[in-house]
Image 1 (cartoon, rainbow, N blue to C red):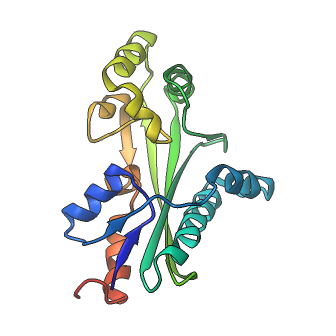
Image 2 (spheres, helix red, strand yellow):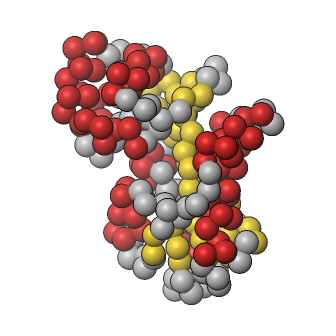
Length: 198
């Protein structure tokens, strides 16, 4: 059975490829900003927002891939007081985000929804709790200079598989959740669905 990842995220693609999961990838035609505004108007929490966006991406892509299982994914980030963060649009905005996260614990929610022929089959949300150490302005400036605009592709503005690990003093949860694809629950679903061998 064909498996389609409704995302061009290099991190998600690498997770699937490294696990030996044959898949295609395509950008979802979902209007993410409109869907996000709609969900926020309904008052959803960060977990619900991630799930809603992941499902919208999968459902928008499914008609383009008849018979295939389509995976929609999304991540949201929130401080313990519920304050949510969007992806930074510029490095200056990313610097502001890092200053706001500095010395605090936030939750990173990674949602994944599987759809076939516009019918939802399965969904899951993983959570990682991330505690940033207090960051100096000099460190933030150096970090952004080294990492560059690639950081703008993720809601947290960090890649823990690289230099971004230096931002943290404690991490609770799977690295797969942090990269944006809760792999172990997904593998269990794919075995149950007959996509990969049991």
